[in-house]
Image (cartoon, rainbow, N blue to C red; front, side, top):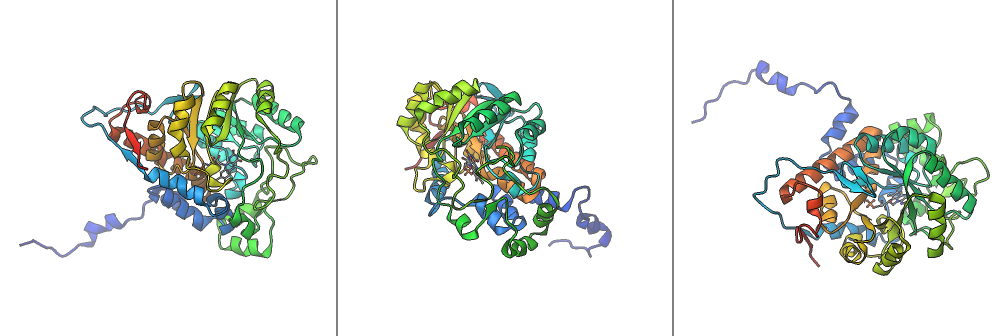
Amino acid sequence: MTNRTVPRWSTFAPLLQRRTGSSRLQRRLDGAADIADLSRLAYRRAPKAVFDYVDGAASGEVTKARNAEAFGRVEFHPRVLRDVETVDTETTILGLPSSMPFAFGPTGFTRMMHTEGEAAVARVAARNGIPYALSTVGTTTIEDVAHASGDGRRWFQLYVVKDRERSREMLQRARRHGFDVLMLTVDVPVSGARLRDARSGISIPPSLTWRTFLNGAMHPAWLFDFLTTPPPNFETMGTGDGLPMTTVQLGTTSAAAFDSSVGYEDVAWFREVWQGKVVVKGVQRVDDAIRCADLGVEGIVVSNHGGRQLDRAVATLDLLPDVVAAVGGRTEVLVDGGVRSGADVVAAMALGARGVLVGRAYLYGLMAGGEAGVQRAFDLLAQDVRRSMQLLGVNTVAELSPSVNPGLVGLRP
Ligand SMILES: Cc1cc2nc3c(=O)[nH]c(=O)nc-3n(C[C@H](O)[C@H](O)[C@H](O)COP(=O)(O)O)c2cc1C
């Protein structure tokens, strides 16, 4: 027999009190339990064309789905009865420390997603001790990102433009401003077929048509920022001095100024100009990984650009073990594509990666809530890295390596 009493207001009123001390936005961000929740928030806050620019991929988006599906095939084989009270997530990527085995990868046009843009991403990365790669087609100057990043680690991602002197000038500026790695992206000889962008007609800088305006009106916070702050433009490259890229339709010609004739022989030129660590991003075959290692680059990123370039390319996670077996002893092998959780990061590390790049995951956070949203994305990933390591029975990132602990993770065919 259960004893019941008449409910009294004084008992349950405190339970109903509104949480105070944080904004509505912050409460929404805190309520996001994973990156998928952040992406749903992002969908509500950003205009559809902007969300689609981030979320979309090339052609039939087969590779984007494959990247995710490969993580779904991961099988963990946890070790039990290991003392995992303390875990250390710090590691070394490209010769310097990172508090986590992941970094924020390069993404273009970031101020279009949220006006705080690259500076917000750089601040979050620096505050939390992970590297951030600024894109050539960024919407913030090299100087401003350096300032926002402060003592943080910053890498510079280069798309080779037809005007070599412009590349040289950008690299020299980045070097002077403390960027410690050059990331040469090589999977964009031409732009992938981004059908969502072609259909929406999105451009950079965004053009204010009636359609954009009406869609923006349904996302007032984004529209208010757009109307009251400088429009996003190619600030990283330096604008306003005769650049061939003025207004670019993202779905069609975003690679118009890029040099599609770049070959292996050019890598030496970039090494010479950069005079520092060089990483080749966009490697998708074992033989190309071997050629890069033969050239003596410090690292490669096994990447299919998150499925945004050649659709039907192989899922990067499937390729990773073979690449690590071929060149892992000679150059650092990083990987990206489809990472949406800390468990994904841990799986990639256990398959031999030296570090993992995160792309859309932090952009969903940025669209959902600016800098606070990027911080939420970092927290969700970081907590899950820590928890996954503990559940797997390892205390350090080094123990995740297949050379130390073979068989922690498998990939079902
Ligand atoms: C909106 C967006 C813009 C991107 N811009 C660049 C870029 O300017 N340079 C680059 O090397 N990669 C760029 N990438 C690719 C990312 O660096 C990374 O390879 C990819 O996002 C990884 O896949 P994920 O988004 O599934 O994590 C971009 C990706 C997205 C989603």
